[in-house]
Length: 268
Length: 268
DNA sequence: TCCCGGCCTCTTGTATACAAAGTCCCACCG
DNA sequence: CGGTGGGACTTTGTATACAAGAGGCCGGGA
Image (tube, rainbow over all chains, first blue to last red):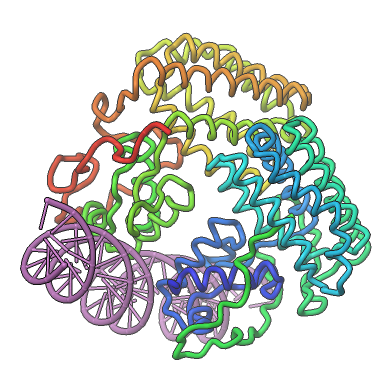
């Protein structure tokens, strides 16, 4: 795999996983050394992150991991509402029903997926990812698909910000079931409404969790609490940059890493 | 200005203006020579174009200008519907009314803007751009704003694909007036509906134009100095002229596109 | 004649060296 | 004591050289 692609996915994963909390400076030389590549492919990776909105230019020309406070979450969900309701609408008109019938049944039985004690809920979110992929295929809109893809990294980051408890996820599974059933039935209006319902419930849950206790990086306790910055936030508010450990096996000789995780597919 | 930024804007403009028609190969060495920069900043520009969807990877690893057929236009408008109705909704809730009252009045008098014989309708589209910018400010959503920004290049490209006649633009001005009035009145429902109406009318017009006459490639009529974009002022004419051919004159030497029309079936 | 394999060439991917520009700090002056 | 200017340093931006991979072409064989 190309070095730029590998570093892009790795950095993206680290940002989504809150291993690189908002405000972290992404210096070119530092990151290049950390990942064992030269600055050229690293710059390409940073450019993609910036285009996605996961990194923004801070003071000077330095790139920092983008902020994610309560206002950002609200705005993110406003965009999700626009894109995902439309995706549900279009998919309802164009989908092959049996795909979504099957997904609906699996969501109906999602309780089994949540029975284990996996804190990351891997199995459940994999199912959500399948629904996303099925919607992508069904709606068959290149442009909408691209916008949604860019969105999903942000959504995944929010998910790590406020972990959902099992009760919430059981509810969410039922909301997803309703979406899948509506799409299978070709009911565009219901599919869009069900998506809106799900998004409102999710947003409510996230905001409640944030209000209850400002949760931070799951790996680094109490690092980034959502700063109460105004809407047109000053981007220069960098949190103290942590000393970053070297990635799992980033040797300077840099043959190849076992390519740890899924390139952050699933969202929602 | 940075070379990568300059080349990015120039290539973007050329693609939007159909000077680089769909299917045109964007070879790195070729374009780097054409713009008098090295491959490094050029690659950055190409990466941004690819992230925006204006260029896609073709056969091999070559980057080509993305396709734009009738299906793409439909998909594009489906995305526009999702994003712009949401933008109108949000702006209605958050806007300062006087801004949009003023815009509504100017759209009401847009006939004067269309009186001249400017084939590019610069004055009119500048007003449309002002409405877009006002909506951007009013909705105050970073994420939605980014998605809309990425969309607008594609929209502009469609605009060059099917030129609107004056009658259509007068109608469109009235549709825009209604949107602005609804936003000023804080009526989110009406604003979204008016946006939907406008988009449907626009799409109808574009598809009719495509059905009537297959793509009049707008490169031939007006060749000189294609800069209708309200992106930013360009005071950067002090760059030292390189020995290599200067792009703005667009001479047919050595560099020009091998096959004008897209080689990969235009109709899906 | 058609298929297959190997080589050659062209294009992209990466590394490194160089240049420029912004920022931060410190000293000096008002 | 505060402001301002200069200078050095750090960081990004650009150019170029090198490497690797894919595609195409040509020759040979069935």
